[in-house]
Each structure stands twice: as C-alpha cells, then as structure tokens.
Amino acid sequence: MSPFVRNLLILAGIALVIVVLQAETAVATASTLLRFAFFIAIAVVAYFFWRDFGRREIETWSSRQQWVFYGAIALLVADLGWFFFGHLSGLDALAFFVVAGVSVYAGWRTWHDARRLV
Image (tube, one colour):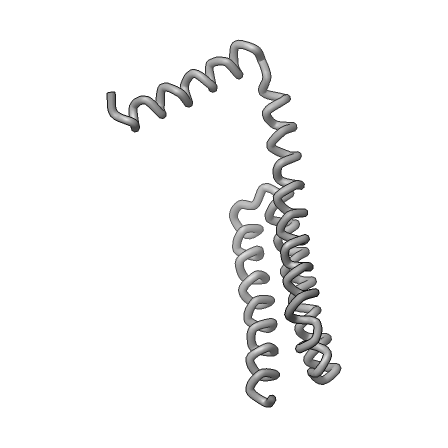
C-alpha cells in the first residue's frame, strides 16, 4: 500500500470517528482555540524579536519614522487579527490583502530609509 493511500485511509478513519461520535462542535472549538494560540504565539515571537534587536535601532530614528513604523505594525496586526478571526471572501479578502500590502510596504520603506541615512 502506498503512503498516499494509507494517509487517506487514516484521514477517512478520523473523519468517520468524528461523525459517529458527533464531535463536530468539539473539533470547531479546538480549531478556534488553536487559532487564538497561533495568533498569540506570533505576537510573542514578534515582541521578543523587537525587544532583542529592533528597539535600540528604532530609538535612533526620527519621531516621524517611529510613528509610521509602529503604525504600520499596528495596522498589520489588526489586519491579521481580522484575517484569523473572520471568514474573508470577496471584497473583504481583497481589502485584507491591500491593507497588508500597504502596511508591509510602509514599514519596510521606513526601515529602509532609516538604515540608508545612518
């Protein structure tokens, strides 16, 4: 038996157990909790990276550059929260990608300009 077929049979068995035990609500709850945990893990890693590396460099920038950079990061975090906890489709998905692109570009451009001046 090929590994592909074996893995499909394992997934089918798990799906059958969930349906037979009527555990759809438990799976949905676990999925929501995992979304929250993943979002919190990303935030913690980003905070530790900022604390260890970025804070000292960003303090040397002008006040305007700091505001733009932190504003772009805050907008990206809010946008990612909207993506993780909402069900995006159509224009909402387009708005998510446009806002994410604009905030990443604003943060990168500010960082690039500040590093070029130093």
